[in-house]
Figure 1 (cartoon, one colour):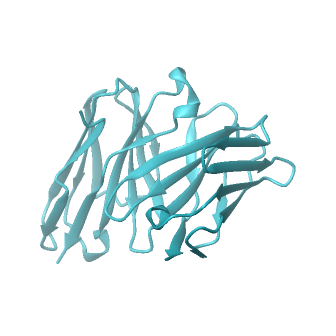
Figure 2 (cartoon, each protein chain N blue to C red):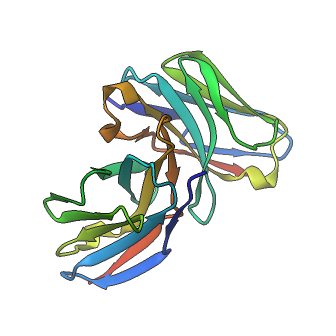
Figure 3 (cartoon, rainbow over the protein chains, first blue to last red):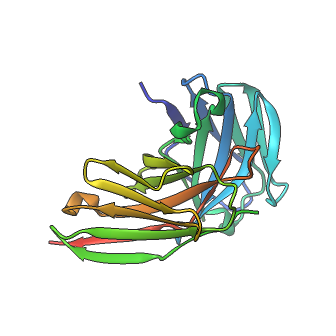
Length: 115
Length: 112
């Protein structure tokens, strides 16, 4: 069973389109995250949700909107896609109350290419 | 806020030891982690160290923590080609929160 699963794994789309990336975790974690990894492999936190409530919202364009329908899901919707949005997007989850030694658990990533 | 720094590249010969270094700025960081990212994959937790420890060993991996200098290192003994990957250092930010700040990652290349 995959712990943190993201769909789709690859996404190629044209500039100006709207797209969504879905994330689901079956670990019973209470906190979920979205990270962006650029072409240099640098990781940047975008959003964090705890029990469906937004707790971190870094400086990202408001074209990016996270949605958490329940604790196990955190989706990322992107409007009016731009070339600079091309990156790998990672979903992650954690549950600090169970022990911080577990860190974050990451999904395998969604490679978004905007053409 | 927390800042985590790592060198970007390291090249070693197969069978040698690799040492990847990391520095962080927040002295209240309680947990420090090492993650491994293989090509096309997500980040996988390798090991962690709690701030009241100065060393932790797990098979071929040894983590050293110098809390005074806010310096963390990961030593991989008998490095193999399968160890070629990007290694990320991460530190918890702030005493009361649980937010991880990641370094930029060190790309380890193992030469056969």
